[in-house]
Length: 295
Image (cartoon, rainbow, N blue to C red; front, top):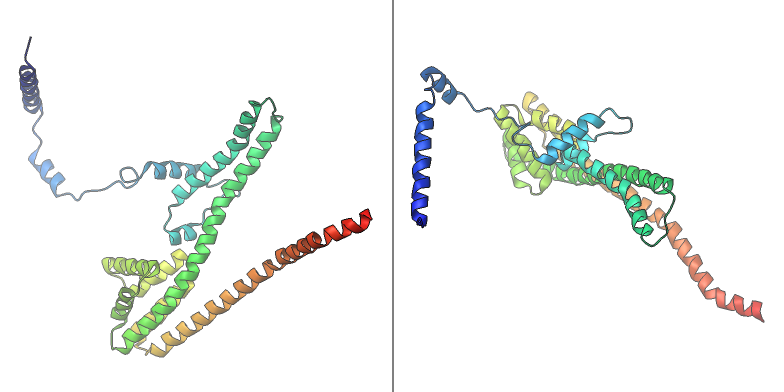
C-alpha cells in the first residue's frame, strides 16, 4: 500500500513540473508594452466590477421601465436619502411581485380546505395589491425625503449662525464655510463636509459645490448660503448681519411650517374623536333604550 506522504510528494512534484512547463512555453512580453502597462493609471470599470448584483438587476429594470407611463423616479429624493435609483426600482418591483402572487397563494392554501374562489378574483386582487405595493414604496421615499429636508433645513439654520461666528472672528469666506461645517454634527453636516471635500479635490470654490448640492438635493436653503458667501468673496461685503438675519428668517419659516403641520394633524383627529364620543354615547344609552323598548 502506497503511503499518504508519497502520494502528496508526487502531487507536489507534478504541480511544479506543470508550472515550469507553462512558464517556459509562455511568450516573453515586449519591454515597451510592459512598461506602458505598468505606468498607465488603473481604470476601474465601476459599471461591471464594483456593482452589486442588486444594483445590476435594478439598472436593468430601470432601463426597461423608465419609459413606462406612471413610473417615475424621484432622483432628488433618493439622492437626499443616499439611496440608489436602481436598488429602489428593484425594491418596487419585488414588492409588486409579492403583492401579485400573495392573493393567488392565499387562494391555493384555501383550496386545501375544499373551498376556493373563482380564478379571476385572486388575479384581480393580485393586480390591485401589486400596484398598490409598487406605488407604496415611492410614497415611502417621498415621505422620508420630506422629513429629511426639514431636518436638513434646521441644520442649515445652525450652519448659517456658525459661519457668521467664523466671519466675526476674521476668518476668510472659504475658511469660514469649512470650519463651520467641521463644527456641526449630524448627517446633514456630514453631507456638507463631503461636498466641501469634493470642492477641494476639484479645486473649485466651496459655494460652487454647495450650490450644486442644493440643486441635486432640492434644498434651496443651502443655495442661499452659497449665494451669500459668493457675494462675500467677490465683493468683500460684510455678511455677518446677513447670515444672522437669514438664519432667523429660516427658523421662523420652519416654526410656522411646524405649526401648520400640527394644526393639520389636530384637525385630522377631530373626526375620529367625534366618532369615538358617539360610540361611547351609544354604548351608554343602549341598555336604557333596550329596557324601555322591552317594557
